[in-house]
Image (cartoon, rainbow, N blue to C red):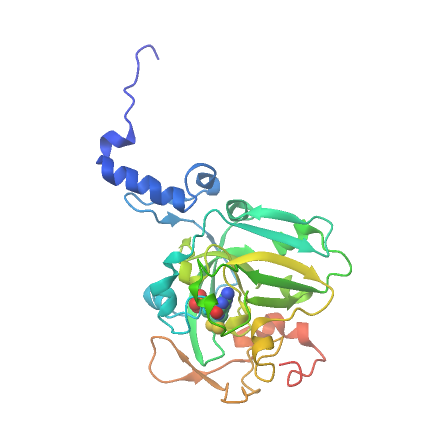
Length: 311
Ligand code: MTE
């Protein structure tokens, strides 16, 4: 080409204030620079990232719980114990910059930046039934990939029998940690074969976007055949251990919350039945399914185990 093409700066198309505010939001969300390489499209005029996950055969076709309910009816005790506390208060959490240390019984411990985790494997949409121990359920289109993708890169040793997940400890960002409702930081764990199961995902988004703070930004676990509290939010450390991890709810009330916590309509919570559940947005109740409806995929993990003893 012999003559010059006029270079049009984005600032000439978009009013300057809007443009600058948008850049600031994108920088905050980690979507400028390296983050752009995630294959994400940016919707014009917003800071929402379209993560463009590919659909998964492991998704349920059941009706999705509305985005509004998924993001305003939450359990995240680091921001208070009320269901609407996380949506109202989680603005103090800063999901960028953020790293996750992968360590313990493995040949290749490593600190991962969350933007590296976004690119580690192909993002999938996993629409999962989620069942809270309190008796309600939702159907949520998560975005993530199998945790096994991260685990195998760490090369766990033969001693690695469990995986422990630890949430951020920072009362400035998580004011609920000033109250002694649980022992902080929140800790959860899985047996190695559970953590390697294709249904267990490292989750970075929902409804096609980056995770909202109240849902555990920037990275959390999602383990759909277990009660919701096994899915730790806002994770900063993943550790391979020989001994069973001491988990937050088990430490707080060991008689009510066991290590396994598989969804099981046949084992009552000591204070209430687990037979039925209320799907958020529906009237009436429906039957709770063994392993939350994922028995075909996961029952073999527990062959020969007494699920009343290992609740
Ligand atoms: N993770 C942390 N760090 N803190 C919590 O209080 N609550 C658990 C789980 N993960 C919790 C957590 C419980 S009880 C549930 S039901 C789910 O998160 C709720 O996830 P959601 O709000 O994204 O639906």
